[in-house]
Length: 323
Image (tube, rainbow, N blue to C red; front, side):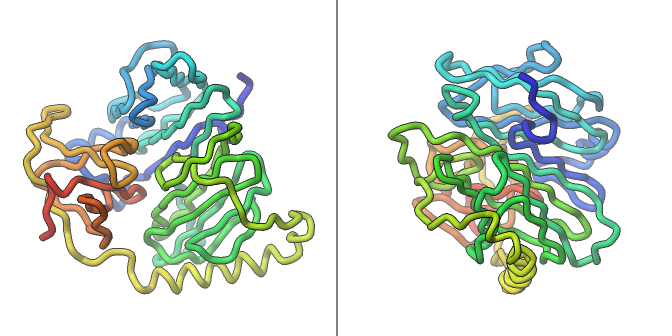
């Protein structure tokens, strides 16, 4: 399809394992992943897809494999619903990293969208500082971080307080995306967002990993006229993000996952969803018997937890309790 790796990885997320762990991974898993590469693919509940790596069938989504040889691969995501567009692109699976791909297929490539998170070391950052870099397709999209001042992509925020941050990306005639990221101390998190063209008559709302929201209603500023104020916006945005993070994003309380009698890879698990309902996209699995950071939100019978260093989601309180 002639798509570049950087712009069309479709919502990938690289997590460097040195210094922190992935929720649900044992020490043995982490040691294995240090010599291998990992791949996770997440699609919506109604958008189950067949997955192919270099033409070889892997499985259906959601999918995770932490024992793949590092290298350059061609990934194909083929929705079971044949009215939805397939997607094919090259991805690089690097040693000691987990690439998590979320994808929301539409009827055409133009109406499909996703987001990629790439984590890189940055020696110039302090031990308690992180950096966020936003790139969008198309560019000059409107970005809001932690409900602060709007600015345009591309955008780089330096000296950001580590921890959870929310961001929104919107552009007229495109589906708005809202996500939560986790800024990691000493690392640069590069976020590349592929916006999906708005389909006529679509007026969906909500927040998920790649879930459409209502069409943007904020007035649009000419990107050219905003160029001179871009540096001011970025500086003030970094300061406001730091101030928000100083209050803490969690409560210190943990959510203990209780027995579900549901097993994946010989482990008893509970599904973690992108929203507080049973129809929301699956983000992964929380292991029974393990405790996860509670983010202080209990909505409609669902607890919001931190699943990993970069992912937060919801678990049913029927199989979880605060402790």
